[in-house]
Length: 254
Image (cartoon, rainbow, N blue to C red):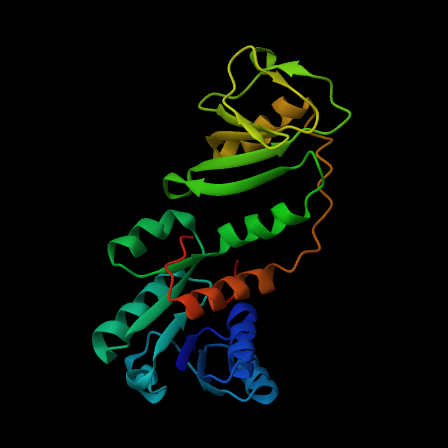
């Protein structure tokens, strides 16, 4: 496929290399001169220096012949404009944008621009690395304002009744997974060591739900597993979208 990538920073550069190795023809538009020079030197891709929302530069990138345009900058507004221009001005059949701020998802959805949400990818990667007892976000709901969480109860925790938990407002336990079965918890349900608790809460109260379930203080969260391949995680999600043409529902540089 012919693929135009807007943004040749960490994410865009990674994808350009991966897709070129897979045999695709890649053109990258990147604002930063050093990023563009480095990518052109290391990978067999054409790098154009400039703004990916510039119609003349999109024309130079042969966007009219592209099978796909990937807008992967750290600015949602630039990603949205680039995708809209590619479709409207150049007839690019498929576009995909990087979503940096979940609050902007509604705009992308309204304009039918498919996105890959960086925050969703980070949550998925981190959840695979956390120790037992840590909080893992399973999904973002309601445009990113509400979370579906899973908390694993450590083996050393004593059994506790649901009614004894001090959960924050607008939070609810929706399921308990235990030894291959799923229970719908009530006030008298006992939380046992090894249980996997699914809860729904506001994103800003995730930690309070975790603390209530684990009876830990705010100073003993123990979050020290941070060496995860976030960049590769996002890259894999985008490559998966390309291969399947899927609309993946979903921080900084492009």
